[in-house]
Structure formats: C-alpha cells, structure tokens
Length: 259
Ligand SMILES: [Zn+2]
Image 1 (spheres, helix red, strand yellow):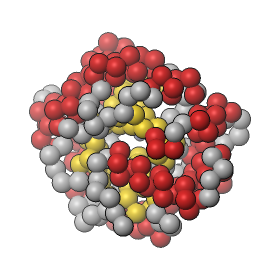
Image 2: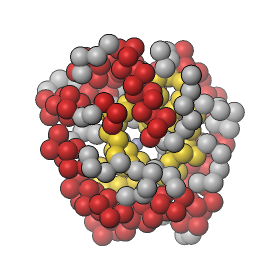
Image 3: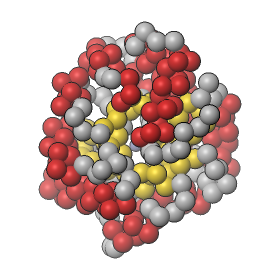
C-alpha cells in the first residue's frame, strides 16, 4: 500500500533533525512513501530543508503562512522566489486566510495571499491553502487569481456547499485526522460527494491526530487511520482508495507517475 502525506509540519513534531528523519522512516514502514513538508516561515523552511536534505522522498512547500502575516521578514518575496527554485520544492504555501486567529488585519492577510498566488503563477506551481472560516473570500479571490497549476485546500473542514462552489476550478480537497472524529456530518457529506479525483489526504502533523491516537502528537505514520476513514465513507476498498489518493497526489503536485 502506498500513501502520500500531502501536509506535514515535520519541524513542529521534532526540533532535532535525526528525529525528523526518523519520523519519515517510521511513516515509510506503514506505507507513507512521500511527505510534503510544510513550514510557516521562510526561516523555518531553510532549517527544515537542510535537515531533510538526505530524505529524497520528502517534497517541500515554501511560503509565508497567514500565522506569520504580522511578522514577515524584509525582502520575503525575493527570498521566496529564490527558495522555490530548490530541488523537490513542489508547491507554494501554506497561504490563505485565517479569520479565527486573526493573526493580522484582513487587508494584510488578503494582500499576502494574493502575492503568493501571483508568485505561484509565475513559478508554475500549485498553492496550498489554509482556510479558517474564510472559504467564501478565498474562493472569490481564486476566481481571478488561481495559478494555472491549481490549488489544494488543505485540512478541508467546511461543508459540501462550499466545496461545490470551487469544483469548476482546478482545486483538490485534502482531508486530515478530523475525518475520524465524531459528529462531523458535514465533512462526511463532502467526502461522500466529491469526485474521487479531487480528494487527497494529509496528516497535518503534529495537529489533527486521528481518533485512535487521541492526546498524542500527530505523526505521518498515523495517516492510515485517515485513509481508512475516507475509504469507509466512500464505501471503497482500502487498498483501492489508497491507490486513488496516491495517484491524485502525484497529479496535484505535478510529479511523474510511478509504477
Ligand atoms: Zn499546516
């Protein structure tokens, strides 16, 4: 069985690089062949990128997340455009809007988000989107600004109505450990109704730990729990679901097909 963890904050699971590399190895033992490493700032990105240099199956996203919108470094746009040229960088992000934590005023967040979309367009890379109660604004902005390589709504936690609005654009929906929780009717409906070729899964480690491991810090090796939940909701065999999600992940990040 092959799995693809499309969103993992390895640097927030462990600080030590050997432990980060071990987390990748443990994930491999349960079938997680590829991981997309996510960072919130360019400074964090540079640290993790170097730590994981030897991990050739780990891909990277680079960007300044909404959580850092209040404290961007000077010259971040130039730096980002240098970093995105590095080997195995396959996406810009995470970027987006967060109306729950309100890290910075709306206008500041929107400006940062749009700049990321423009950079992704120029780089011909997809964007990874962070959305907290800002779905409609994000979709409105994407209408005119979506990069040609599309977008991934990471840790999708909204309802089917919102997902439906985005379906005419090249957008993937990535589900995390919260799909294993109780009382998530709206989320279940979304997983049920989405076209199979738009679905991805992610660990969102160290957050969103699947129900089976409650109270632990999430790790990519727990991803099979999320796979099982998605397969059960879609009434699809687990192995078959894994193959569908894996193929979708390669497509979403423009990676060559594997045998
Ligand atoms: Zn994240």
